[in-house]
Length: 290
Image 1 (spheres, rainbow, N blue to C red):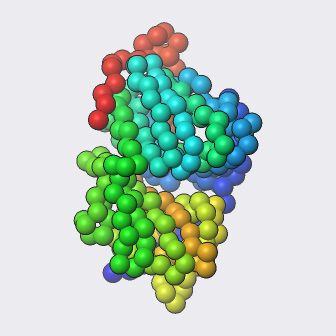
Image 2: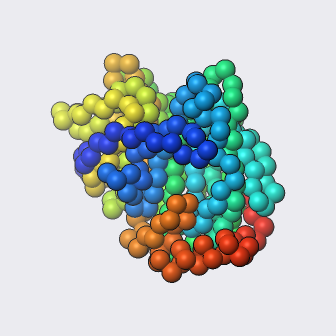
């Protein structure tokens, strides 16, 4: 059983999205266009209202899933199918855009500001035109567990600790494993990842060391750590401790045709998507809520 080595460390690049939201991006850049099946990873964090108040007004998606992990603050959302609500610090929204959805994500200006992550996960070709749906995961519904080695875990998708901890999201084609990990100084984390699955850790704060005990490599956040193949990810908390999202999934090995918020398999499918948007045929069915 082997520990996955660090293959690449990527420093996020600043960018502006939506109507003027300042954030940093580590997947979906020229340096790393995608990490199959992950398409995008954005990290937003600011206590300055001008950096985020403009938000993300109504915009379309097709062919992907978006996962928003809110650390601090409040984001109100609504869509063209009538779904409205808000997520707060600790909450997660998992949206399957499928055949198409128009939605908005509008941060609320609050004293503590806002922080969080958004991840785009590709859908396999056979599922790109499925019915849209939501999973709204409230913080109080997610198990928060401290392991014997001092790591604090929240399992969002898949399972951890050999099945002792399970997240509310399962049964997806790419078999995602998403675990929020907080490591106090000196705490240890070790988690099995199926061989052949893509795996990364996004360190959003503090310092975390990864690898074998005698070949540790320390990483200061914010940074994306891409792992090579192996059986386990192993991490230790640095002197100040640290926090990271561990993400892994089965790669699709399918062609990617990408145009802004649309991700399909061929250029022809992208053209059809744009035609559907212009002609009013983009929204196909009511969303399902899970």
